[in-house]
Amino acid sequence: MVMPDGESPCISAAVGDMDVIAKLLSAEYWRFKGKDDQNWTEGVGGIEVTVSRNESDKPPDIVIAPDGIRDLTVQSEYLRNRLPEYQAAALEVANRVLRYFRFELLTPGVRWISSWEQSLYTPTWYDAAGKALTGGTWIYVAQPVPGLHGELGAKKLSRNELPDLQAFVTNPTEPSLVTSLLSDAQTAWFEGSLRRAALELAICTEVLVKRHFFAKATPAGAAFDYLEDKARVSVRVIELIDAVAEMAFGESYRKSNPYNYLLIDHLLRCRNKIAHRGELSFRDDAGNIVIADAPMVESWWHAVFHLKQWLESL
Image (cartoon, rainbow, N blue to C red; front, side):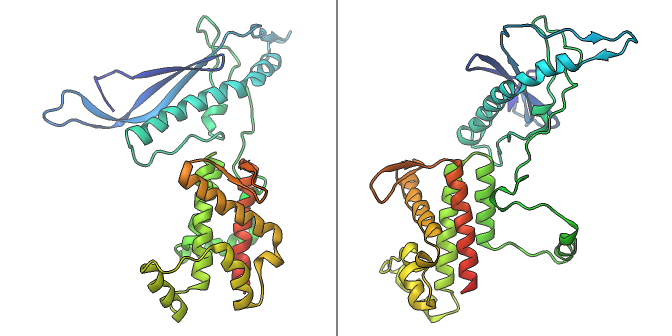
């Protein structure tokens, strides 16, 4: 950003009944000024978010025990119960700012703040007079950790994996394109970018299926590449893993895994709707419009992962 020295721009917004102010903090370690520039160009080192709301009841006072020890239990409970709403408002406005940088200013490498960001769980609380509430930081919250419960294939490192970890660090390998796409889709899902997750999964499905059927080192692969380059061939993935797979490998994914096959079919239909209209939806076999939500996209991820394993077993 280009600002006069000492100036930190502030942006305000209302989120429900919350008043939110986001202040852009310059990165003191990075600044640049050309000979014809009036102001410094500075990096944005952080976003300070202030969220306020008129509460119906004021925070309870700290209890002082006879021995002089302060009991923060009641006050901490009061603040902890209100924390999720304040967190949600702060997260929403901070990510709006980041979306502006990424999509309007075309700033590269911008990533959204996640709901498990540590700073969201260590706020400083103030009263209406601007006085810091004593004991406001005495709130211990176990923030969510992505993949903690095994969502989208996430695993915990145990002693059993240590030899594999050591071997990988000693001789690292680049992930395959399919593995990278699955990982990107997983990251998008955890960030709440469901459309991007669905697109990554659809691309992953196309790549893993067509590469399995039309490997470059085979005559079939060479023929497919030639016909595709000439725009003479168009093969649907859903057909390849059904009738074509049964003829080539003696097993149809639709017949052996009907549930996952249907999920793959819905994923590819949704991909088309995203590409054509930008909508995270599809029509089922009955012609009904289905809006895809997070659990549905999660089921698509598992279906694609299962399809990968099935193809590798053929």
